[in-house]
Length: 547
Image (cartoon, rainbow, N blue to C red):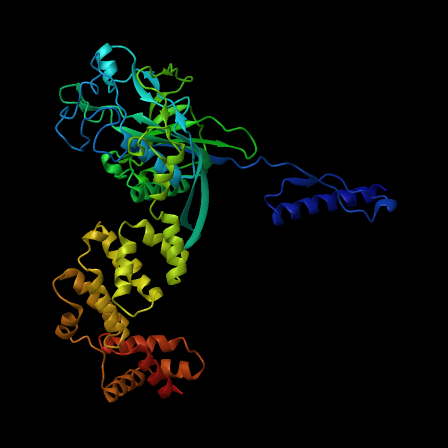
């Protein structure tokens, strides 16, 4: 019996040793093996240790979109970027005593249109509130030397409970369209603050109130995202929608679209963890970089800023507790009422003097998601191609203009637009409207290729020359550089024969069944002809000569 126990102990050690080698990440160990005859058929008992769940990121966003309006939210002051400091400030904007707000109808219509595009519920009655806090850019703070206030909508915003569908390219090759949805908690109207200009040389801060009172839409997104890539894709889609609607120009470099990101981590199924806020991110690329979840360290309750030079966030201040904004109803503004349709208008009210939801709904343009689906259905494009077309301002119109002027199939044209054109534009940081090659010029080049005047490689050379010399047409470049296809079949036979004679090993490999070598010989023929040989004809000739 003792010998049996020793043997069992040795067997136990060997089994655990093999388990640790074969399964190094396993969290179990065999504690005991029974040596009694009655239990000899039973399996070894495994005790599994429960491994802690992996932490996942949680991201929520607050987006401030400057409303595309000629005047401010509550005053008649103009809205213009880069105007001389304090040149666009009315008495109300400066919070002078005795001035009263007058609501800008255009701003209300823009908020309603945005809410409809984001599938929100429109509150037929919404309320304005005062939000108090100490901030040097607030005119009321400057005037009263105490906590100033901003007019916003805290109790009952203009719209609630919406959602935004967005897509981005993922996968190993980044060619797979991944679809996500983020919930929109609310959309509220509010005033923008002024701008602080810091003079480090003189150790002073100057205040520019041109931006004070400009109309904003604050869009609060629920924490439905898990990483910076998703957040960037959601903001990119929102930017496209706002630009399509015309409710916000969305120029982030001019502060027309600013993002605050709230980031935390937690175990799935557990409450959300401590939240860190990254303020005033003014670039989609910076947003993706600012939300990078790394192992190690702890999440602190802080407000942070993104430093574009270092590519990291830096602390601004700690959040020791919830800030008391002392919200109170705005006494100088009545409830904001919007109407569903003309039938719901009170007697004697002119529809031109109020905001009618149905009229705004009927005026909605084709939204980006609908446009992508139309491109896929109409032209047979891949979803990733439609994503690229719609995400570049003006690229859809460029693509469709090319299609109108050529007989080339859409799926062949899309490669030229998304690869050649977009590639050159990105290299030189240019927009589609700045392209030196007009849609008609590209269509002419593609038509020459389609009708067999030039090869695909020669067409790319012509494209590059057209980019460098915008005044030249494709036909001119082809004639000047003699890039037309070799029309003499006998000459092409001779060139192919010379290539075959100088590469006997490759010829033997093809005859031995290695058909991949054929592409190498075709490339050598193209080199000899400077890309002017018809690939189909070259392949046929080589196959005949090596059969």
